[in-house]
Length: 249
Ligand code: ADE
Image 1 (cartoon, protein in one colour):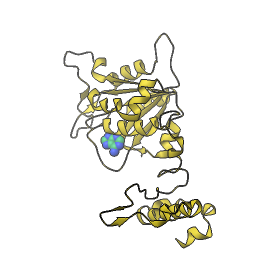
Image 2 (cartoon, protein in one colour):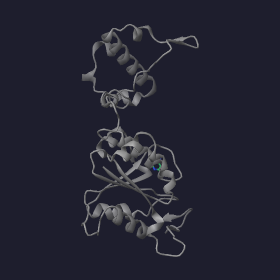
Image 3 (spheres, rainbow, N blue to C red):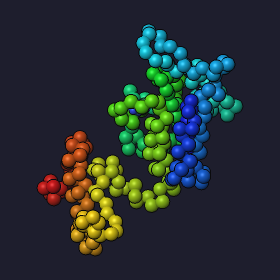
Image 4 (cartoon, rainbow, N blue to C red):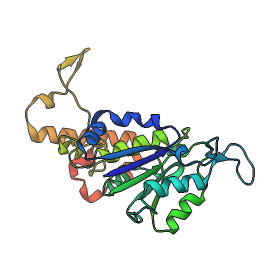
């Protein structure tokens, strides 16, 4: 997969050199390129923003600068011809909520272009123009809070997508049981050695070696956690997938 990130703060994205995403880049699974938006400015001051039409606080990012940047990194107008396959992501607190399902869908793409807005955001014509000209555009929020810009949201989304690419997470089974996975439940609590720590014991069942009982206990705990912490997820559960034991939890 190729991902191009355009930002006025390329250093924010340096965390993507680390850990599993860093390894995915080094091994060639992920071709991630970070660009400075100011490389597409044309004035002496390398201006990327201006005052909002209609008045109000703050500054808005200019569509002309963004248009040149996105065209270039997505391959539009190059000798190779337009890359209609590039999927444009615009992190914004006013976007659709980014979820594990969004990450799964994006992990299928060949090429993502992430445009990190700052200030009051990017001129709305940018999303409008790329949608109108056949690019898939997703305006996405990572949660109901406001960050200073799209960079941290881009980090979140790129990590969530990259770990789904084949070969990135060593044991693919660890993707199956985790929170927000196919079961629609939060993950059960996990324990390791020592069996007693600070007068707290690991639940006996996990030391029993009895696989069926362990499975049952884990499912009960996952359900219990989900009921307490995320009643909204319980509402979305498929009742047909629950057994009589589940309903007693
Ligand atoms: N930019 C600022 N806040 C954001 C959020 N919550 N999600 C995505 N992008 C953002």
